[in-house]
Image 1 (tube, one colour):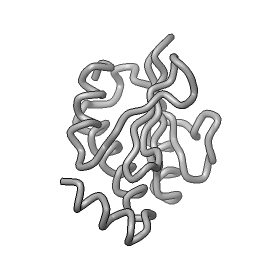
Image 2 (image 1 turned 90 degrees about the vertical axis):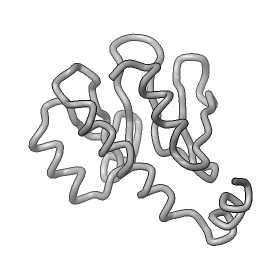
Image 3 (image 1 turned 30 degrees about the horizontal axis):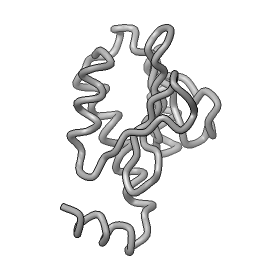
Image 4 (image 1 turned 90 degrees about the horizontal axis):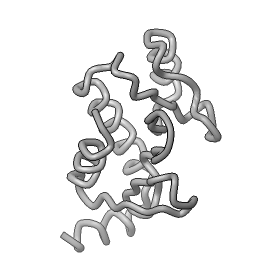
Length: 118
């Protein structure tokens, strides 16, 4: 998956937005104002995703391209090297998992506001 496909997919998720709060070299995707994916725009492509802690450990053990989140809470975040070793289908599953993990933490008011924006 390349950066254009990644961006297109993230923005296809309900109420997903993009931002660059950390500078010109980091693209961030959010739902309800909370980050569900970060990616670098320079160097080898990698993405950081929120993950349920037990699942995070399991997939790190199973895949060499997945490691504890770089500059993130390592219990809840993974960094995925987009090195071609993981299928696009699996990467999409990981993105969806991250999106859902973040969406579940949103307040009822924020969720209601998101529904009303549609």
